[in-house]
Length: 595
Image (cartoon, rainbow, N blue to C red):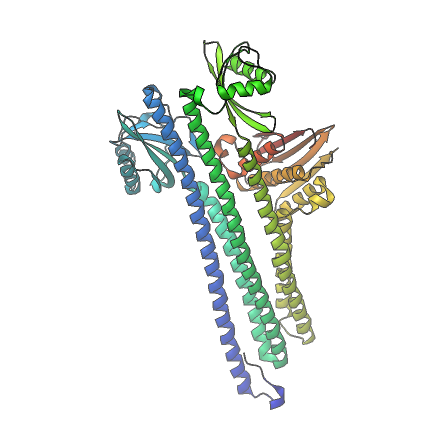
């Protein structure tokens, strides 16, 4: 940095030119460093997000393939070959994905397109689309024929489209070995279903990096021009520029640290999810063993006649009946008997959850047509329910921490940078500099960025929920969402009952927030209406949008809707997701009995 000391005498023309060249080189070098840092951070962040997203979805597909392979093996061992062609016909994965089965020769035994069953998978595709490159598909097919288990990405077409085009697919596959034959089960889904969030994350990351680079370029331009005209103004501008750069670097370092901390918390959440999946697999294995050895099963197994009389109970079942005040040869009490009667009437397998003391039991009821009885299999899911609550709690803690970090860290740094910029405007005004308008433009950009970060922090950390109640927090949420998404969000309330339980209020707030995010991201909604109304001992939350709409079948596996269902179940509310009257979708949550 070249700073002229006035005590050494007046600056000559050559001194001014030399000083200008040095300052120009300094600004260019610093700009390249900032560009490399911002670009490197953006590339690394998006690469990590893309890799993590693909890995999670591939593991999900592999888990489905393993489960379907075990189920198919059981059917084949029971010599139920007639189920093979229709085994996967009604199963979808995501919006377009499906499940298919081939034998060791690559012949399709099950596929949603019935015309392909019994034909060579690769040959029928080559015949239909001779110009496509099927090498990646052949590689996956070869691994399946060898009996491997794994995941991958390959290129193929969607047969359900009018004009199919080559697209990437994620796949997970698992083998099925029986005494008679060898099969392979594959589960695939569209790569584009995860490409959208990846592109959105990449756009946001590079937008932030671009804004930082643009702000630095404008500040550098003002710094360099002002230095050429007055040495004293140069000294002041350089000092403020260094402060700004240090503040931005400090905010960047703090943000990187926060990302690392949040990553650790997300890993803990993923560990809880994996643990829950393992427990579900163990539960399925116990149910299969239960069908063979009910007397040795540690969980309750009952056989109930149509009229409600218990005709059989294993040891665990006898203990349960004793706790319920009944026993073999006697009637089941309500509400157990009502559930059995409903299953007998529908003649369909049913699952239900029922509270028993301080435990929660999952009941699987299997009616046998024309046999006059229903088998009841009980499973203690108290720990699983606790884990679901823990997952929701960790999610709320993570969002709250991020919101507070944005508010207390980055927002404060941006406020400080805005103050420095305002001081620069005042100094340039005093010096009658021709670059006053550029400085004012930078100050405007900083204020808009500060307001955007403030709105984002309020959405992640609803402090108004504790101080002013759910209604006020919903109103602020509507205003913030409208500003962030640049859409119309209207909040309406009528005779709202106050909620004394802060956890219940937070769940309702998160349900509304997630429903709006789905409407904007998946439905491209432009108008959203949030309604909160109720009467005596009853509260209804309704989110209505005018987007493209969606069905639970097409997006049932999305994390957003899973979060909404978990939260509604956690507070004992009835959840309804249905199409709008003309277009869009309606998410309705009804809470009976104020918790």
